[in-house]
Amino acid sequence: MPIIVVGSSKGGCGKSTITTNLITMHQAKGLGSLLIDADSQRSSSNWVALRASRGLTPEVVAIEKTGGDLKRSAVEMAKHYEHVFIDAPGHNSPELRASLVVADVLLYPVKPSNFDAWVFHQDFEDLISNVRSINEGLKVMVVMNGLSPSPAARGQEVLALREFLSAYSGLYVSPHFVCQRSSFIAAAREGRAVHELPGKADSLARAQMEMESVHTELMKVLAGERPEASSLIEGVQP
Ligand SMILES: Nc1ncnc2c1ncn2[C@@H]1O[C@H](COP(=O)(O)OP(=O)(O)OP(=O)(O)O)[C@@H](O)[C@H]1O
Ligand SMILES: [Mg+2]
Image (tube, rainbow, N blue to C red; front, side, top):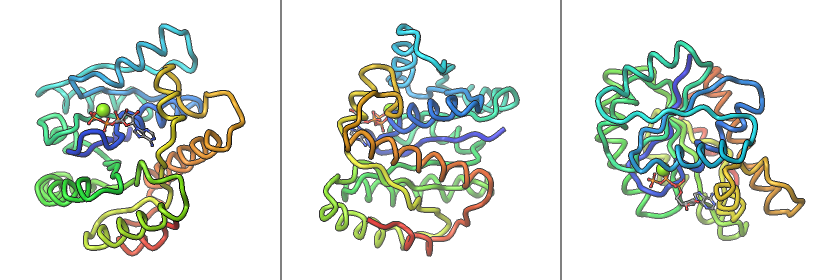
């Protein structure tokens, strides 16, 4: 079943945050999934261990896999789980390259900064284009992460990212994005996803809604309901 790689060569763009939130949401919806932590820094494995030590449910099952075996393991695991999520390391690593060869979807988080945009350019040229000559069906879903919670500042960020990304073809830019919110940090501290945090604060509700929307979007991409067209960049509304 589908393999989803949450990957980018840019460190700190939100791969582990997005992976842990999405997979928990996935499990809560009764969709069986496995998390493969392909990063030797073990962020998502540590999060899973914390979650397990607190007895939180639904359980998130994770394995750690680095090195040459990753590709084979992912394919093997995909036979047993409805979805496999791979949390990739934050550099152009053998793990990232190997996982993309067998992936159905690359979910690529990008922050609203030129530093992220420059890495995206490099990844598009060196990684995505090359991998597509082997894995033609690879879908790329770009998710803007860490946008400003303030609508005015966010508007500028979305416009700039949208313009930048429009130069690349064969991408699906998610119309749903994730803002910079302390709820994501609070959730990680507890081994939870944002939708598991109690409280009625507006910013928490927004964090929950944002992640839920990204999850829905991912499911649509997996179901083939989203075209790979850069024209859809116009759909991202600040
Ligand atoms: N939307 C967000 N709002 C607030 N904090 C965030 C958000 N996304 C990520 N962070 C924080 O930014 C930091 C980096 O995020 P994360 O570890 O998920 O990135 P990463 O891409 O997995 O990093 P690495 O490349 O090191 O694996 C973490 O401290 C995380 O809590
Ligand atoms: Mg990480």
